[in-house]
Image 1 (cartoon, rainbow, N blue to C red):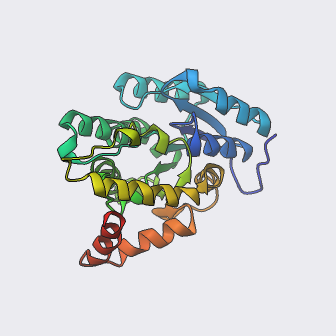
Image 2 (cartoon, one colour):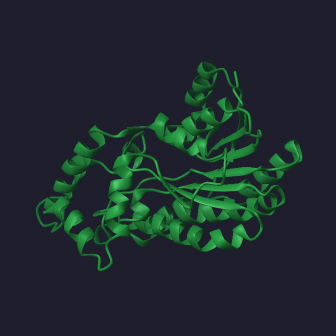
Length: 285
């Protein structure tokens, strides 16, 4: 059952990374608002949770496969959407993956893999979609992270990718704006999803003994565990994302919770970087 409100024009919306978490709930909320949602994911074997959520909400979704790290997958999906529906009004870049580690203990290939998913995947989808968003005067919404504003211990590669996304979008926004396309980055803080469980890190295998970073990592994991105990729900974060599809064009930067706003505010008012270093350094002391 949809409930398009007066003043909201139904849109053709592409959302990446919808098998779980924020992407799943954003897709369902957007469909509830009356939009036609093309909900994509890397592996269609993981669509069961999305299908169940759509059934519960009594909405229909156009579910398809899209791997943001495969150029052909990206171009084909965007072309298929335009061929099927005649236009593309909005894109939500949500696909991404977590990563935990520090550079001395990982390979350059691991770092590159993080960048491929979290940064180059966003760039690829954006590049393919922009000509169609120009035609529709559409919206480009990208889910980044508070980790795209404040670098965090043992998250060098992940935060670097999210910083890159924020820099890319902040630079693109005025250019896209001249063609009638609004650009927004969405910065969640701690969200109760499977994202953390999927970072590919086994706490039981935490280096000890001769590893100079073992104590800091243990402290970081303890602090992170406590922060996620009070995490925002994925449903509420997804609702924030979906709401950006309607009404006046949103601002460039949007946080999904008061906690995220407080955290990001530390950086945005920190001209010499000292406040951020005090904050994050305390996590691993």
